[in-house]
Length: 179
Image (cartoon, rainbow, N blue to C red):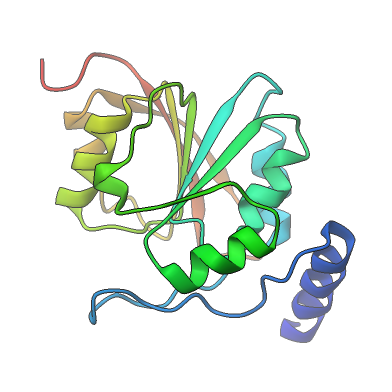
């Protein structure tokens, strides 16, 4: 079954004119390297986006999600701290801000896409800087649900994928953070 998934990913990489099958290197010594999110998940998430959205992919890796989301007509910007991954994303035609996610200007963002990239304190800092109306958070657990709630977000939807052990948690802004 894994071979079918790899063939599917190769086909979509070819179709989109990108290369994303390589694992993104870990940063900071303790972080796990990031494997790209499956195209099936990304296309399902893309169906929830509008052409008017400004999507920031926080921890974009090589830019697979950016390439899929851009097909909706949305403006898509990748955020990546790894110089190797940022260079690969640029090579894939992705607009990338190479920086620590805690230092990025997210003004204008309507949606943040994240694949469980951070610990709670970093996530809190990103949510406070961004204050985006929607956050799409791909994770195996709701480990950071309390952080989202404390920062003025409520869970509005869960997208479950039969062939995956992760869920896309859709969070919507309910209040101004830290009020």
